[in-house]
Image 1 (spheres, rainbow, N blue to C red):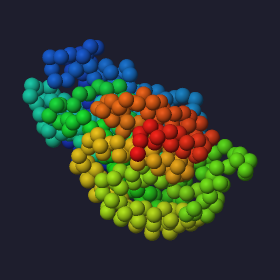
Image 2: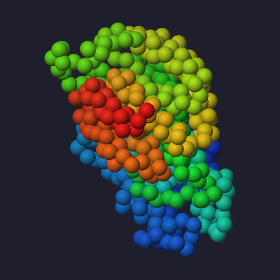
Image 3: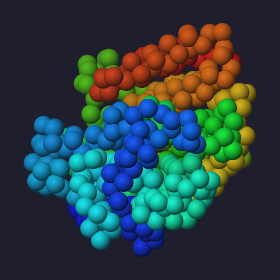
Image 4: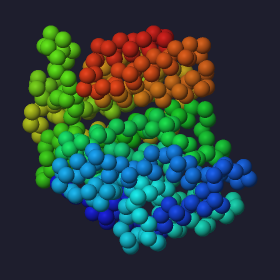
Length: 432
């Protein structure tokens, strides 16, 4: 198994030797005249309390502290990596963990996932960006990561929320107790304590959250397909890598055979007993692509079906899997550009909501992870639709979507028929 070294911890751009500037640590942003004000200010284009919001409210600030809780300490013992709060393998995602030569000054990892984890090394732009009328583009040129770009923002989030070749969660870590990784850009962004405001000139309108959802789905799928390819091609890595498969095909509550919805559903596309590929990211993306580009969707679905058939074999050919995943990732990348350029409005958002809800039975049968992705999608899309359209039955739709999440509170006891029934309720409220 690959263990992370500090030199690889800073992320893809940094390891490629393209670092501009060095890291100063979160203290460089904490002054009350910078981002550490207790109360928001109105005399500048930013509120200047961003650091205060992060340190007091944001779970990222506590990402390091969880490494010393009982579950984390047990993970460290099982994996034989020592204390997780001292292990590079954990620190790369739970803190700002960069080698000493990339630091301007000494700072500790106990600040968790801090400013520069997302915004990039600050030494190049820390001083200049305080100047009046200093453009964002100059900061980006000096090393700031451009989180305004939806594709770039998703890619940055996914370095930890999906993983890279250097830092990752695999089945061994999951078996030791680390949670599996799930992500949905629009929902994850919406539940963060907001410490930013977008310049008016950059806002693309009332439907930016829908655009963020679509771009997030496209980039996440592309990254997950690249991960499949990378793992399949790694001759020294474990294969099959069970973290790529449907967890709950195996890890579910056992019931009498007569009551088993999985056995009633059957095992189309794979041999009974073979855990199938986790297609939750693709299932939801398919709805978007079929809505905006039906011809491209057909080509994409053909490749995904080919890949699924290979992944669902008992001992699928790794070279063929890698090649198919590469082709599918390239298609996802092309589609992602269309998704980002797409014009989003009330009509398209409602069609997407209806399409996902209408496919409730088939999504439910893909198992818990697909159901979870569908619930997050409906939540994000309806939040935007409700804010902008304010439908008369908005409270009912919201309650029905919340009911989907209630079906997911005990994942191992997930019931596809019950989830499908709740999706039907959402579909009826949304209309046809």
